[in-house]
Length: 509
Image (cartoon, one colour):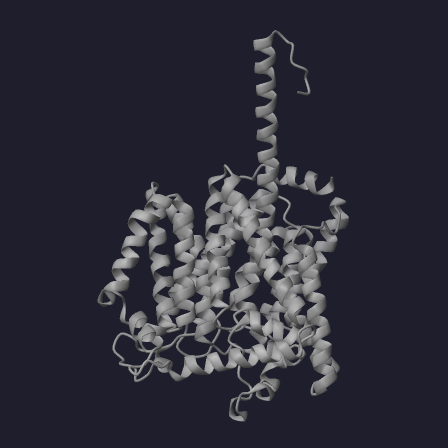
């Protein structure tokens, strides 16, 4: 009953004034541009320690104010900062281990959650359908982490605690957001913030390639020298980031294509698409295509079958029309003698070794983070020790066991079902576009993680866990509104039958 009440509040609570809305978006954009300005220069920015400490004090004071008075804005600022946390750790010189901007945000998000609960008399935690597999997955991960320490003993207890905190933090962010989304306004703003940060990072990537790397005039001798990592420092991870979030922009353009104002979204979409090509990551490019396909299919089946699919087939059989960054990388996968290139062949061998590892430790795995050290015991030569599994599903099964991998897959399936429910039943145009973009990004995530471990970097997954919380709340609102429409329709039908039969139909029929 408590969850239904909150959902009704979500569904009907009115927004605030236009001035407050634009002030909030101005705050978000200024903060995002400030972070971008720190990342964008040709050389590293070295701020004086006095200025750093002053900014730190101001930041803490702002967090205190927002955690008490404007908690929703604190969530928005964290959502803006999340993709920048790796390139801008904000550790204030590194004098105190674990003291950085991400952890400060996490502390005040938890503190604000408690303050909001006590101030407004709300329940601290409300269970949702996805929570059980998430909590089980976290528990199995913690068990796996202790297995790592039991068998290796290479780290101190404090290092292990910080390592576990980094792994659990994305799920904690999900729990924080989903239990503090109390109005539709904040829900919508979180989606828009993700669109804003994705757009800015797409432009930042082009700047990194064409200006910092000299892409306008340089002829790179290898793919490795041309690839861009931007916020992740690793091209494959950055490509995954783009395949997770770009389709929100695509969906809002498609569902509002009659409105000329939304045509401006073509520019950031093109920037993100081009940046995906410049990662030269085959897995990310395939994931991007898969996400785009799902998004277009959900938007309009006629366009999909009569325009999109024929164009794709035309390009497949005429690759000369495709960008060289895509064709060259894909064609290099298979050599002239019909064999795979060394990168692909090594990846296949690693997958085979992962399967053998799972067969040897099917229930509890070899311990979180131990794959790279144990893989040589399962058929790989010793010179590849330290290699990644290049497949998230196999990695989770190998390190944490098949039950943990099953929980992870169940989480993805529940997210898909929630997104599809919103897309199918909502009458809210914003919700429908957000659901289509979310499902496109979820498809990109599922495909991208076939080719690599693309969930082990918090800078690319924090926002997706926030999106999961948003989509579950959208599903709650959609369910309440759908049930209300059904109830009204049944009542209208009952009255019509009463009118036709002269009042002979029982009220509860």
